[in-house]
Amino acid sequence: MKRKLFALLSLLVLASMALAACGGAPEATEEAPEATEAPATEAPAATEEAASDFEGKSLMAADCDSTGIIKGVEATGEHEVTFTLCQPDPAFLSKIAFSVYGIYPEEWLEATAGEEGRTSEGLEKPIGTGPYMVSEWSRGESITFTANPAYWGEAPSAETLVFRWSTESAARLLELQSGTVDAIDNVGPEDFETVSGDSSLALMERPALNTFYLAMTNTFAPFDNQAVRQAIAKGVDRQRIVDTFYPPGSEVASHFTPCAIPNACEGDPWYEFDPEAARAELAAAGFPDGFSTKIYYRDVVRGYLPQVSNVAQDIQAQLKENLNIDAEIVVMESGAFIEASSAGSLDGFYLLGWGADFPHVTNFLDYHFGAANPQFGDQSPTYTEILAQAAQIADVAEAAPLYAEANNAIREYVPMIPVAHGGSGTAWRADVTNPQASPLSNEVFHVTDPGGRDVFVWMQNAEPISMFCADETDGESLRACEQIVEALYSYEVNGTAVQPALAESCEPNDTLDTWVCTLRQGVTFHDGTTFDANDVVATFTMGLDASSPLHKGNTGVFEYYDYLWGLMNKPAE
Image (cartoon, rainbow, N blue to C red; front, side, top):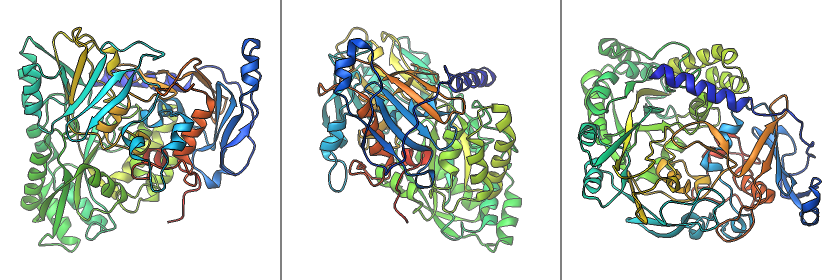
């Protein structure tokens, strides 16, 4: 299974890097990063009159020292956008297919950009081009979506889509068995056999493209001592955790990135469980009697962590038994936990994980271990510099030695402990057509028919934090957004291959540092406005340019824009 998936993902990544022609793009002019007019390209005769009225805009950094990977985004025609990069990016298509980079109407972005952040309308009722529109969000209960009558793609099978949630897998299964919902996410590990044996239900298993890790922030003592972190890495029995709390299809993490992804598992595997060596090393580091700390987590279920409270208690017991570390368990609200962990402000252990957004090793390693990420405290140049170099190499074999070196450096530095790649699954009423269990957890429900019923009810693990997903990282939020907002590319249903969405194509030059995207014509947003190149420029201005009045979100951090592309005009810390 792993070999087949590895081969599939390798082909998919290589295919996305080798897409069509290598024609160059018009050279963007250097100017201050703000929305400015750019000349429109010549249009076909049938649309010449309309094109002549179009005034293209652009976002352009003065130089690559004031930005990250993207130097500029320019409307080089009403239906053409040119991305100019500061370095080659072989994963460009896989990245822009991610729902965080969904396109919003320019006017709507302007209207919902408040003084301190995105307005409540912007956070709870986003406008997109997707198959569903937000009808009502009853906080704490449900979100109701209605079908978009003007959707450019395949019309939704159900007129109404409802999202509900419960943190308890048993409660979700009971709702499915009683027929009050049509599908549930993350079947409990103990319920796989129950669902499989019920002829009225259908089980869909996901590949384990995720990682659960035990994190530490090295700006807090005693985690500022590398020897302490290494001792802890040897003092946690990860196999016991997987065997006890994870469903079929799960495995102990030998590396941070799941091995099904090319170059993920180059280098040495993680430390073996050795409690005697762990105690000796902790004593040598100055803690013969252990120490006191905390274990933070949020009480939500994820594919990478299906029984969070049980796992937290087991780790608490292991730390005491193996290392004499007393760890108090602290449960936090989900949004506050994500904000604090992302900022590197949690002073103890914390339980977190990651599911693949796109099938490329940069999605796991560059996000977590890039120089700009404060999540684990101070990152080490022993791996940050290597990762930055490897990310620019398109050839998998050529990049492999660099990823081996980076993985070994991460292993030595121990910013966290990779524990498990969690198998997971969705469950459906048996009469549902086209059930899904996306390996990226980005199910899109307009292509699923709930047995001919007009209402399709989906129950997931938790309530979205917001639905302005340009500034969210939480998977439950992203799945809601994926019904509403679309990006230039998308991922195939139940797969990882990229395909055109709001763009008909995006073609690179020879050096992979300029991409010209031809946009789909005749697409309208939910508010009736017409989609064009300026909406793409406005959206990326909102996400990338920290000095723009459009750069307003929920937290204002824009993590994915920052870590995958790098922000322009980022204020000094």
